[in-house]
Amino acid sequence: MELPAPVSLKQPLYVPNKTLMGPGPSNGSQRVLDSLSNPILGHMHPESFEIMDDIKAGVQHLFQTKNTATMCISGSGHAGMETAFVNLVEDGDVVLLGCTGLWGHRAAEMIKRLNGDIRYVEARFGRSLTMKEIEFAFEGHKPQIFFVAQGDSSTGILQQHLKEIGELCERYNCLFVVDTVTSLGGTEFLMDAWKVDMAYTGSHKVLGAPPGITPVSFSERAIARIRSRKTLVKSYYLDALLVGQYWNCFDLPRIYHHTISSTLLYGLREALAQVCAAGRKNVITRHQECSHRLQCGVQDIKLEMFVPNANDRLPTVNTIKVPTGVDWRKVSEYAMTKYNLEISGGLGPTAEQVFRIGLMGENATFERVDLVLNILHEAIQSTKLQEKSKI
Ligand SMILES: *Cc1c(COP(=O)(O)O)cnc(C)c1O
Picture 1: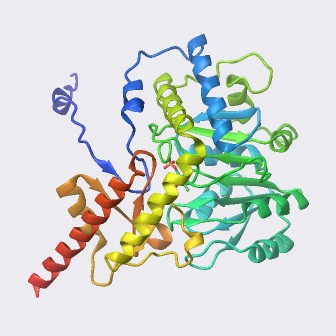
Picture 2 (picture 1 turned 45 degrees about the vertical axis):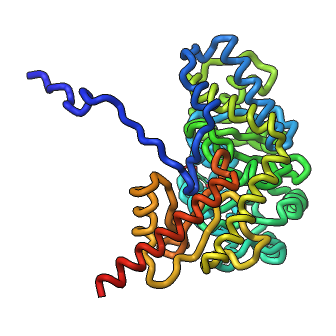
Picture 3 (picture 1 turned 90 degrees about the horizontal axis):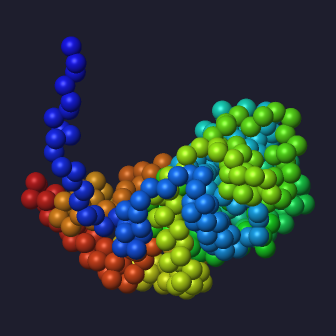
């Protein structure tokens, strides 16, 4: 007997229009959304290759790198992260993880699977790592790879001193891997000048493209390390030498490695084009000014930022302490039910403790900052009233 087709699929597709001001994804611009309805192209068609070349140039510009091994992975930010480690880590390699929140620990979950020798250097709660802490950890562990998230979206912490860390890594002949998923485009990042060996970012945070395609870049030193591996990279799909050949990184003929989504290429190309048209530095400044305005507004409504030191605050994901007696879930629900606005709670080490407000891409405007502040204030007042009426 044939199983019947699901009744739900007889209904038309319904997608609400939400304002996404959590830690990502962010809203896409009309130009990005429009690009997604273009016809699908083959993954080996010359028109697709041209779009891939445009994307590569845009990503090199945003990372400020001349790395030829700059490409995209078909997958979300996690796939970029896994690409770093599956290519660079071999059995027993000492990997030092800088932790300012959840993401160092998420990296550990991947490195465990590769039999890497994991060590940690943990920042004090709510702070970024100091050079002293990092230097001390390097002396003790002599790592082959050092990882840190420039922006940790679980805590809203911006890791400073990347230039100094790059120099330290060079002295120790250690590869330097940086997660820029939530930070790129919202704060300065200079891959070559800071001697970063591998960086990845997200398409759906500051850039405002759809999730599912992740820009990554490897330095020559990193590519040399991959070429000298004793064992095969343990993932075919994420093998940087194969993906890189498809992305025309190595002066070798392009190969069919997998079917890339042409639709996602269109969205990412247009998102990059918009950042380039506005100017990379202007976009960064806009994000910083928006975060500053939010921080001032937070004070005005008698709330407190989670990260005490202003220099340690990530402009793109802003963490605000949940006031005592307030249930963050109710606040978040109120904003979504009444205004279709996403305000997130904490994650990992900040669970139950903070609101996370994303100011990224289309949502990094003064209008959106004021909107989210007004709604956050109203939502908190309303949940307080509810509590009172219960008593
Ligand atoms: C969002 C995020 C990721 C993961 O991205 P996904 O697209 O959800 O897989 C990784 N690192 C940081 C810092 C992030 O904010």
